[in-house]
Length: 117
Image 1 (cartoon, helix red, strand yellow):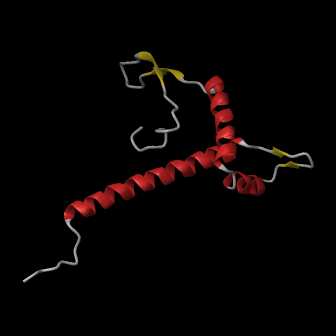
Image 2 (tube, one colour):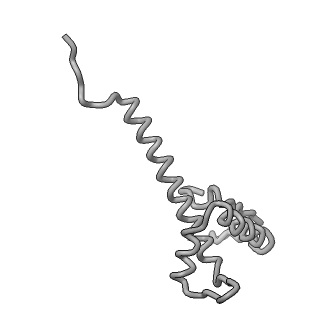
Image 3 (spheres, one colour):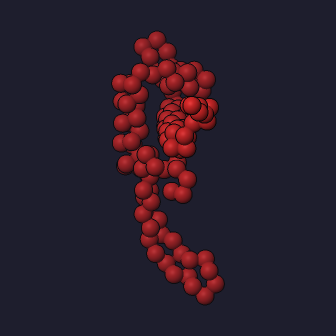
């Protein structure tokens, strides 16, 4: 006598859950990357016109192929390397402390939007 179960084994459920979490994190990362690029582009210049309408810029960025997306992303990364402040001088706000120190912040776009970072 064979007994069949319609419930998946626990390992399969855990594996599927982990895969779903990875996919969701990847989707969030991609959405944040696109949002960052969209916010960095204030106009698109073509031989015939300059486009400054936010809706048209959004559509343009969302329709980019991988090659052109990577080109724009590299330019933004280069600008950020040269302009984003990474070292901060801090002072403890606790009464009777006032310790001062410097802290560097890693603005690495691969982990910047994750929880706990």
